[in-house]
Length: 265
Ligand SMILES: Nc1ncnc2c1ncn2[C@@H]1O[C@H](COP(=O)(O)OP(=O)(O)O)[C@@H](O)[C@H]1O
Ligand SMILES: [Mg+2]
Image (cartoon, rainbow, N blue to C red):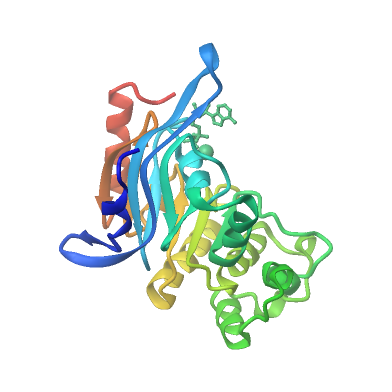
């Protein structure tokens, strides 16, 4: 095994000359599914940093490995080789129980299907992960988050009594409420109309700018990606490009070049 000491000792990354602490890092990360004829290299030696208090979008053609990358970095899926760390913790060194605890304590998730419990109210859904962890919510922080996502008047409603956009806002508040080190979203606005989607993306961006939250979001939508500080592009399981301060137009332009190379699936 080559020494990873040089990676372990690095705690900051330099982005355009400014030093940023690293919230999560993948190093030479590979993920292979199946074997023989059904073997698929979903991730091929991916190395990427996600800076603290940064909003990163992951883009790329369908099947390029976006969800796999997010799931591996978030500790939801095992990987074949390489390493992943969240903060200073190497995921590969953790036992299942420790990994579950790390996910619970340090990571927030927002999925496309909002994953709310139908029998709980909006407020109960927001505090559920902390209730399970036996942690007391910071009341002032909880109020700030609920205010920011505009759910103050809806806290006693059950998911079925809320619109799709409101349900996703509950999911955003749930992810933010425990002040996780990093929030991962896989197409978090994929099921929303464009107005509700824009609201949710605005909240995520505010949480980064105003609250210092770290957010990593998989999306196929250039408009959604333009809310991020940085876009990382995947193709065929590899990182092929990166854009800072993206606009919908610059992202779209970059995506078109994938099509020209026949890289869409
Ligand atoms: N559970 C799985 N078993 C086998 N192959 C998989 C599995 N999940 C994903 N893949 C394959 O890995 C590649 C990357 O998938 P994925 O990360 O879901 O891509 P994306 O999210 O960019 O659309 C694809 O070729 C996909 O078919
Ligand atoms: Mg996907």
